[in-house]
Length: 350
Ligand code: KIV
Ligand code: ZN
Image: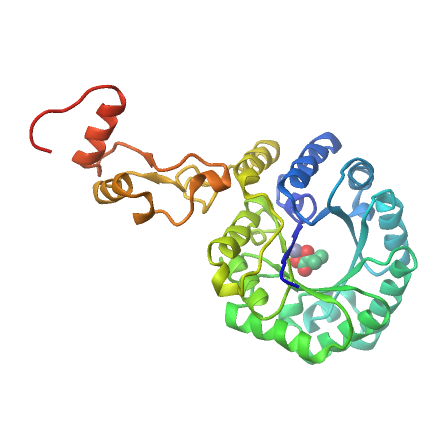
């Protein structure tokens, strides 16, 4: 596959960020924009979690055209039935089933033995597969799980019908080389026909790097969120993984995504406005300073040739190109340029 699928979880993991609460109308507005952006999958919510989540997933599944619409579910049948009830109206529905596979989660949270977890995964995926052919399975806390045991669980999931295997770095613990090796280990050890996916959290600021390491190792779906929203320090930022793959495509064997990058800035602004989460000024790709230059040397360079200090053409992400900001660090070139834009031309030495 020469395309990396972009699985957007802004409306599920992103909405789990402390303080964010979107109503159905707001979720629909974001889902519409995500469809315009061209993501492959919208994870619309976790229907068993609340009546509001159920209604939002149902509304998005019914109204939004284009992407696959996914609903999250634990392995319990009640969860899966509820998720299906919400998502079944979608033209392309997906059920995303998860259960934790790390020792700490199995012992302390689930209070299940590894064998019980395996049986739960098999039963949950089989139940989901009874509803739809598009079933994703995630071993939660995958990066802190015993890789051999995790692969045993993934194998029963594939045997029960899972078509996407998503490997979560739930607590943002992995480093890129290690996460890449984990993805390669899955591909080597789990038999069957499936797409491998990454789901990386940003606790160490490595979510994007880990996702890209996963792609380099063979993953063909990235789970990410607009503006990097998500639990705690967030998920891999959609705009960053997309632009890294596009800008450094040669490093990824020419892989592409289906995202219309000119919609990135607009999507970021919409999500920021509706969630109330500001975008940091210096945020890559969508921050207001991502294409701004204040220091004299940089201004001189950019005025001569934008590419001296910019690796992305701002227009390709819907931003304004090479903004020259006059400030303490500015030099003569920017000063003269600003005056010229006002119709004032300096005479004498420049
Ligand atoms: O971080 C995580 O493990 C998750 C799973 C539900 C995929 O969000
Ligand atoms: Zn997550």
